[in-house]
Image 1 (tube, helix red, strand yellow):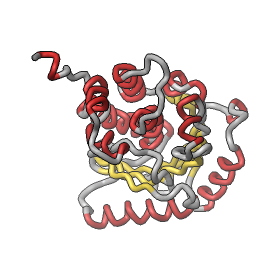
Image 2 (cartoon, helix red, strand yellow):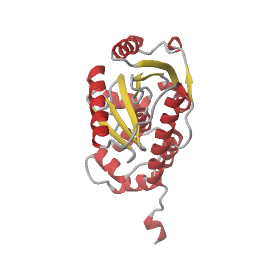
Image 3 (tube, rainbow, N blue to C red):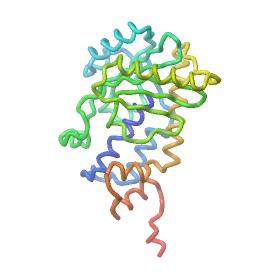
Image 4 (cartoon, rainbow, N blue to C red):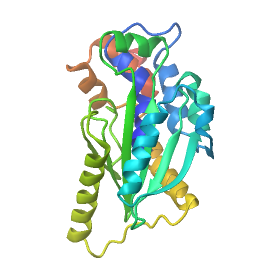
Length: 261
């Protein structure tokens, strides 16, 4: 879910950063409003039936479920983030949640088929894949979220300091992502035996951890003003132009220094 939130906040940012044509009226203030909508309010996750998502790759969900259960993971629920559905109605999807046998890893599997005018432009120039089949694993230890996913290159917004995210290639098989995360959490606990991971004993425990991660991300987005200079320059691959500087100030809600002269 941590990576899911990052990607949902990213799409229009990437289009803007790469200098592509924005929808009419979509300036810095509008981008900030969209980012605030994604990160600035509690998200509601509700149980759903896969039958309500005819465009979802259900074979992917079922294959991942079979592989995870063979590794001792327990299926928890299929859920929809109705808050994100309201913000991105054309990109509606659901997440399949699991916990491992030790109850210290929560896993989510989801299929995203990004759509919309801006996303279509990104896909035409091969800057964003047409389909994302994601496996994401998270563990929460002493206020830190250890996250492993197969989203290298597509979740370019920086996570908050509380999240230690490792991004593997999109083509990484489910069980390789699992093995990598299990190795990371084992190494962390070996190095810090005094730290105890949060235990996921129920559906509510999983939702509570997701909510805490979202609070950390929302706090970080507010701290950087929605979008940081480093993020925008990294996406551009160069220092910002005067026009881009003005756009960033608008996103961050900062005054134009020349206006006071």
